[in-house]
Image 1 (cartoon, helix red, strand yellow):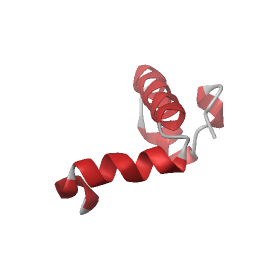
Image 2 (cartoon, one colour; image 1 turned 180 degrees about the horizontal axis):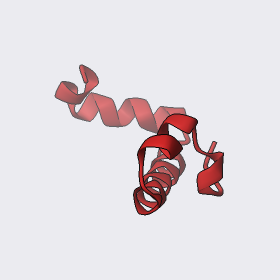
Image 3 (tube, helix red, strand yellow; image 1 turned 30 degrees about the vertical axis):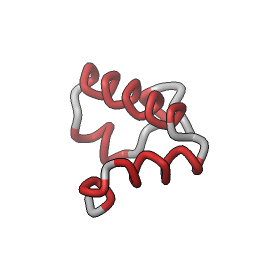
Image 4 (cartoon, one colour; image 1 turned 90 degrees about the vertical axis):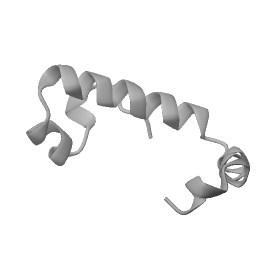
Length: 55
């Protein structure tokens, strides 16, 4: 689920990153969540880049 606010993020993120880094983390997470929300898209992308499937 996307994060609406930095206070919604896990303690490990809030306790270890400064405020600005938390903003960046939240925006990147929400963007990836939106981009890959359809599970069929996730598998398709991994099969195009076989090296990434092992990551």
